[in-house]
Image 1 (cartoon, one colour):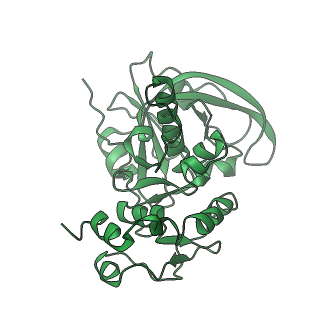
Image 2 (cartoon, rainbow, N blue to C red):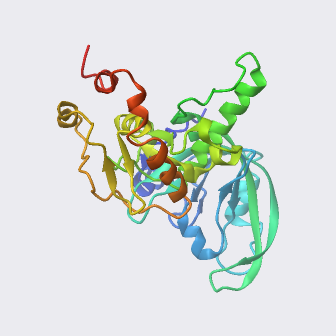
Length: 309
């Protein structure tokens, strides 16, 4: 029995970890290795140059555009391999492109439920064409592999009602999946391996006005556990210009021992327009406020970071 040699959220070299041991096409968005029962597909921002953009719908289904850069897409080659992967006894594995010359992030195993045709999609030359879009359901993926810091996500829910609990978990998974399409790494440490970061809401779960805000990938950041704690508690935040904001209340003895670059005003990269309203909320409602709700905020942060017994 074939065992998938990849772990959801981890980073891999396309050449060394996929093609070298198993074969398959080394270019393009779909690869059909000859030495393993799997179909490997790749998603990322590069698809936008060819007129399409993969996305998660509200039901947790991933819509993946097939291959073909110009003219109508045809049900042949890699597209046919996706559609028939179950009949052919092959695993369907999804990887995320992280940028030129960078490792690829393994997002998990999926199964193809169906496909549909989408008219009017512009090809590489700017001409309208028909695209094939596959509806993929996750079997085991980053939806459950990455920890979500939802803070008080259960607020207002009757814990005896299992349907409500399931709904919360479903929304958490959808939030994770959408977030990694927006954020690729921890803003503080640069860690990209999802096994070592947390998915943190910018605007807390309980403060979200709608379910759409709770599952919006733009309402989140990937942060290392320590950075996540500092952000969630309001010790740090980020300006609209992509600069780190650090409260003066952060104890110097803690700051010296964190091992993080928390230089006030340093650039952590730009944010897109959809993230800015959420960050504004964090600066106004969380930053320099939430940790003050503790009776002893300095002792609370030191204990949380393991600096005191």
